[in-house]
Image (tube, rainbow, N blue to C red):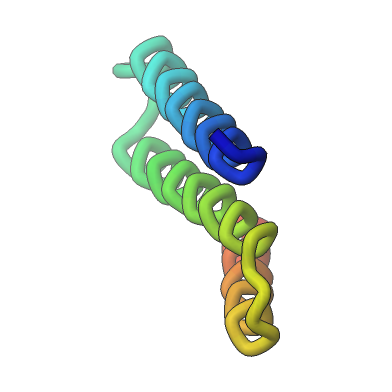
Length: 83
């Protein structure tokens, strides 16, 4: 296993843990929030996971055009999460 494989595996494990934590948080708050709050929370979680995935891709990207595209996507997600 190369260092890159280990980094990818660590990233995948972190994503799984984050999803499990989010699911546990959702179960803990089930029934205590409005449908709008749940939808907003789900949207934020989706953005957070997308951001994590893009950051991982960005750390591995070597093509300047691909890096630029990923940086723009990351900025868009950051802007959306800030709303």
